[in-house]
Length: 186
Ligand code: GRF
Image 1 (cartoon, rainbow, N blue to C red):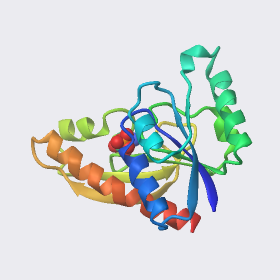
Image 2 (cartoon, protein in one colour; image 1 turned 30 degrees about the vertical axis):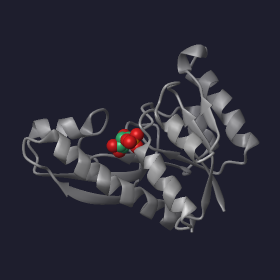
Image 3 (cartoon, protein in one colour; image 1 turned 45 degrees about the horizontal axis):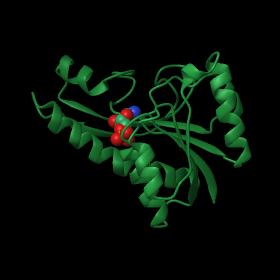
Image 4 (cartoon, rainbow, N blue to C red; image 1 turned 90 degrees about the vertical axis):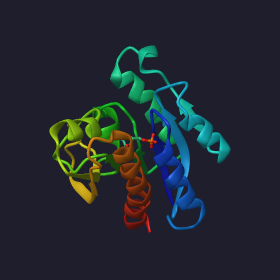
């Protein structure tokens, strides 16, 4: 079994999809820890429901990013965590975690990278008027959504309907991320 930590800042629907796939035996991994940078993130409720430990730390309570990440790293090491799975973690990963987990950090992004990196990728795609967007799972490097691509899936934009487009993207994410983790860990 691979020991992983899931990093999330928000709702955590991708975390939940991954956790369900693990609980069903589809992915051979254990989520030892859910890490969040937001004390009120809904992902905390989801983790509690599954009985998974949560580490919630506010970056502003630390001197700098290196100190914040060093505090996380100590907790990861104490649990023998081997991979970091980012699922809506709204921060750039710094040298402390990148150095400790080379080629062992993955992320999901709601566009066909390299198009529309960064925040609000769905809004960016719709504002640009593209007809096809999608989902990318990639390795994390020091850039913003620039790491090596592992898998992608296309999603048709629902013209002028952000909500409908977003829910199609989320539905694809909830299948694609477990599929990639199964490929990486099993
Ligand atoms: C997803 O769209 C993911 O691609 C992006 O942030 C969103 C997280 O959603 N990085 P959730 O918190 O998993 O529901």
